[in-house]
Amino acid sequence: MTATKPGSCTRPLPGIDADIVDDHGDSVKGAEAGGYLVIRKPWPSMLRTIWRDNERYLSAYWEKFNNRCYVAGDSAHRDKDGYFWIMGRMDDVLKVSGHRLGTMEIESALVAHPRVAEAAVVGRPHDVKGESVFAYVVLRGARPTGDTSALVQELRNWVGEQLGPIAKPDDIRFADNLPKTRSGKIMRRLLKTIARGEEITQDVSTLENPAILDQLRGADAAPKATPAKAAPAKSVPAKATPVAAARKAAAAPQRARTRPTAESRKLARKKPKKAPKKVAKKVTKKVTRPRKAKAGTARPKTKASRARMRRAVRKSAMRRGGRRR
Image 1: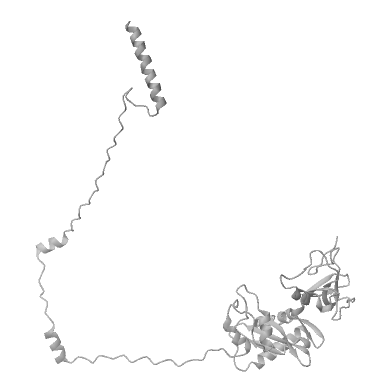
Image 2: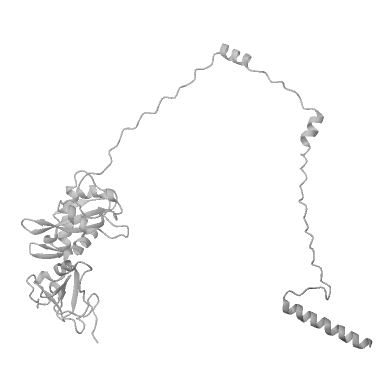
């Protein structure tokens, strides 16, 4: 039995020739040295093709090392006991000045800062380093606007203390939230496209908040305050003069005030009689029973039954006649 280690996928199963190679396809022998996870020989459950796109299958999984081995697309390293450790996807590994950095490690360092709620890190081409670190950060609270150089420098120094100076992000961009699908998955390809300044050609119909794209590009999407419109002045009626009040009182019809009599009080106390309820009459149907036919009067329906009836009548008549004799 193979002893397990937390976080390790142990050794390859029998029949699977797995290995870790460098950029030239040579096997990495040193302990804790990482590289590409590959499979040198085919095995029954390995991916064989992509439906209706075999060229993509060959270019994505075989052409990396001239069709010599199957490239799984994951980065891994092997410890001194020969146990394999999967570090993540190769597209999530940045090569900064010859150093391999995992995006997950930089994101974890950023999120460890007390002011950061969420972060996503992608790579951006660089003329000197080869690749630079580009970070999108969501802070706890409102998104900062204006001059954010002090906060950016604070986050860069924080990552340098956690991982080292080589892992400091070159660019940090703040947003209200990250571009996610409705299922909660971060659209990292979209972040890479925006970081490289390329035009977005992929489908963004599944994006939960399409309005966040302007913030990710660096445009200030803070709404401008519009001056409030003055409310129209209400017309205040002029105070009535004593002469106008007297004319209005004279023009109004005077209502005669009469005291209620005893009869009117009695009528007011009486409750209105309720209309009698109409009871629907029950309609009873007469059930007529069919009359019973007398014996011997029913006529048989078929010819055979009629003939049998005739024979029976003749026999009974003959018997009667014999008795009489």
